[in-house]
Length: 75
Image 1 (cartoon, one colour):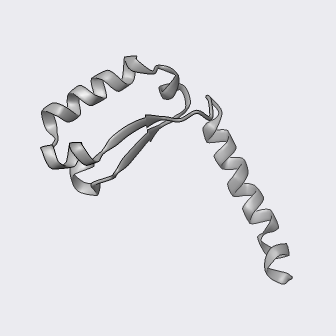
Image 2 (spheres, helix red, strand yellow):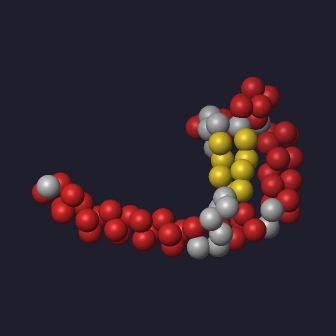
């Protein structure tokens, strides 16, 4: 995916982020082996600080946006 999308930042969230170095170390090792040097140097991996329920929070934000979209647009 990194070679296709060329992201500058990959954010790991939820339960994966809580695994911390147990997940980031193997991911970094795989990047070092399988990614082109220029791409891996520009890509950083960060852990979300929003906790396990980051997916739930995102879903709530989307629902709120859709609920209040009509109200915001009418004013």
